Image 1 (cartoon, rainbow, N blue to C red):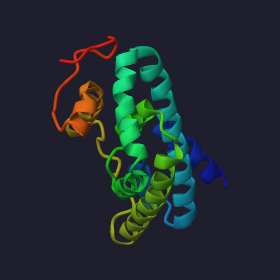
Image 2 (cartoon, one colour):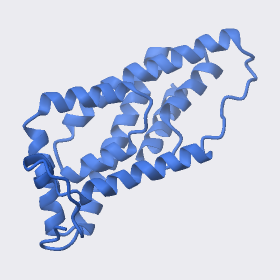
Image 3 (cartoon, rainbow, N blue to C red):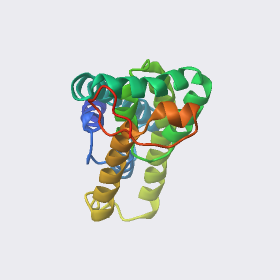
Length: 206
């Protein structure tokens, strides 16, 4: 049980970090390779639960900080256009999020952006939980199989803070900023792409 408790806390902390944290699937692969005797399904349940909790807290914090303190009224109204659009397409939204959660792609920027809408957290939390549960189980199982064929002393840690990882994180976080600058009323209703000049002004259209 100590292993599970440590895993839960470690994954929770990793998913609270908004950027540059090692991906959870890497930690699951490491455990599967180093401790192949562990129950794969139990590991996946613990990790997926912790990851979901961490990401939901991150989403809530991004809404409180960015939307509540850094955005002006015009910026909040702009994001609310997206909120209304997503609320009318809950089934599609859940399906897309579920497919995304099956992938190993980073989810920090996704939850930060979602937090800005202040939509109900279950809409992203439920599909993320089930998607990550499946993907973590797969990663752990594959790593456990690798243990049977590879040298147990093989270094799997790698350099996650390599240039590719850093550039990817910066690009994705930059994408969140860009999404807040798009005039969503024009984009979704008028099919016209245009940036807004400011997040804080009362009428900041370009």
